[in-house]
Length: 177
Image (cartoon, rainbow, N blue to C red; front, side, top):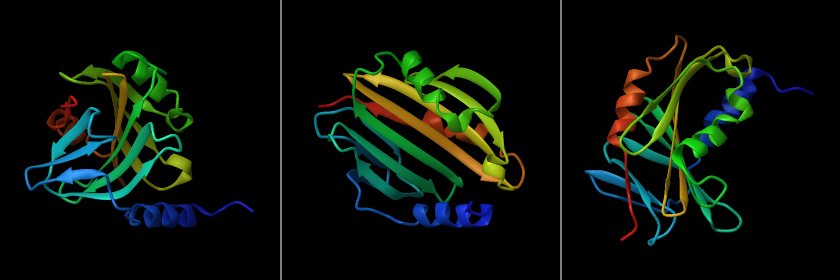
């Protein structure tokens, strides 16, 4: 029996609202996401972010975060993993883009920030849902760690990509101390 789109959407929203205690450091000025004390971390402006999920992989070599920003109405997924599956930002980005969820991406364009290789694109009516999404995938490889970021926004009309690009430019990677 196939689930109806409204049921799928309700389940997705419920999962966003399920918060797990996070492995992160927060101040009013910044929020730091990290795998371990001696690993690179992702630093983002602290204002408006709520962590909805934090989950380590089974081997302890990776950590996933899902955050939402009430001010920008954006979501950020961050995955930090000690791996050699890729060893350069371009290579890591290409691996991320192989995700089947991005098969129907439209308007894909590549760009670079000082710390990330990135792709931006849109997906209309994902899974048949009556929404349109804007996405940015960004990757870097630092000290043996793949940092994979996914920024997104959704609405009844196609969201502007520029606020997501500005958000990516506000993020940074901090090397381990």
